Length: 291
Image (cartoon, rainbow, N blue to C red; front, top):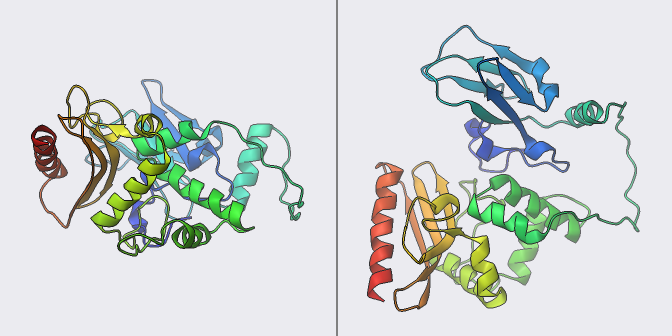
């Protein structure tokens, strides 16, 4: 489901996939287009796909707000691949499982046994790496729900947020307004010095080699691979972007080898985001060279 304070009209975009208690396929529909036609995965959504006669400026695929009806609008070629969030419902999960397993699936209400065990799959760092380097909102939201599930029997993000604030973050310089895992909500309010304190706490607990391997790296990896280019790299961090808002925080290694923690937040600007990034790059590179 969409989180509190999320922009409702972002629902068709991949960065705004719904958070659910039973995620499947990243809660995304993958659509490809070539000279033959369209391919859709999971195949179940083929029956919900139609092509419109009406043309848009650029070709696009839109989903109805309250259903999984997909419509392709022809136009100037813009992409050959699309990722569209699907609209969650219990009936959809049943249909997807039935389609995948090739057997009848029914919904039943059975209390989870107290001795139930959790099966773990991939290592945590491989998950953290995708979340931090690619700024994957879906993973961030689902991790917060998993934390709530460990603390209680209910998958509600506010359970995990309340516990974290009381037990791990009571010493922050400014109390944050925190409502989701991804930061998509406009209700999230963190000051730069609070973010710096968070990075400081992480640096004290996680060995530097491991920590830096999980982060986006200027000029090399993740959302800043095309920015802050230098050899050796000097920026390791995490970006945050909404319309008219762009942030970057993390660690800066100076030319003399010092490690500085920084947080830059830009909001309510009308210039292009690239112009803002150019100014950020200039400032951070100056700090790198001077110190």
